[in-house]
Amino acid sequence: MEYVAIVAMLAVIQFMAFGILVGQARGRTGVSAPATSGNEEFERYFRVHQNTLEQLVVFLPGLYAYATYNDARWAAGIGVVFLVGRLIYLRSYTTDPASRGLGFSLSFFPSAILVIGGLVGAVRNLM
Amino acid sequence: MEYVAIVAMLAVIQFMAFGILVGQARGRTGVSAPATSGNEEFERYFRVHQNTLEQLVVFLPGLYAYATYNDARWAAGIGVVFLVGRLIYLRSYTTDPASRGLGFSLSFFPSAILVIGGLVGAVRNLM
Amino acid sequence: MEYVAIVAMLAVIQFMAFGILVGQARGRTGVSAPATSGNEEFERYFRVHQNTLEQLVVFLPGLYAYATYNDARWAAGIGVVFLVGRLIYLRSYTTDPASRGLGFSLSFFPSAILVIGGLVGAVRNLM
Image (cartoon, rainbow over the protein chains, first blue to last red):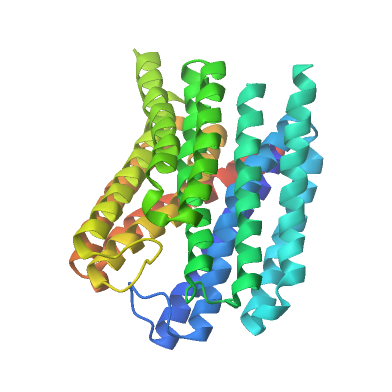
């Protein structure tokens, strides 16, 4: 399970880094707390961070469930795709939100595979 | 623990489905990323998704803690109420946000029971 | 691990309490769902809740990873600093958002320590 824990920690460190980028965008664009809108550049970083939050809530439980009921190394490998997908999502979304499809898919589908694999593995274990 | 893992996976799959509804509402209402406001229908789906995110961060740790320190089958059963509550929340919020109380309660209280049960069970285990 | 579970449950209970404060602020300021902006006081409570959500997604996996690969009592102790940090964050942010730095740091850095400690511990275990 160490590989899984390493990927999980890297995913939350990546999320923290995205949060720091939001803070920097706040300073650069002059969007003061508590506001979260009013400047397109800020909103892009803000949305990348928020979308990553939404994905982590699926990814992390899926990662551990897949590792528990299937194979931990496969779980970690699929998790690496997720990490790369998030990086592409950050770069494409902040350049042009309309181009976010690839990065989104490269993190959404790995999460979906982990969750469905975890579900199927748990059901199979019951039988 | 398999029942617990199954309920956990179903809860994140439900959350992914709510996310897809948000994406569809984006297309239907013409609210383009990074915007998240400007159309009441879109905002309702967006808020259902966001509120479910907030609830999952409580529900999932509570589910596992309750199962660890109390009974895994009860944890899973309470989790099923949560799943139904979220579905009612989706339907009522998108029809009329003012009617969201029942669906909210049917997911908030199961989460609260799991968390408080998990806390009490862990404290009892220490003694 | 009971100390860790107790701190984890207290963190999500604190988050639920912050959510109740958001609901009360909604009533007090007349910001009706699905809106989440339009009143500065409401937005402060809303942002405290959202920021705590973002922090929990880092804190909880870090807490368990640190406890698994290092020491569970240290994990719980660092977690208590996080809980106090969040309380300071709530009080300072709702008084004056510009003063939120201390409370933010007292929860961001404990989370960072847990995550990096968990990562280092897992890598060390592999070798």
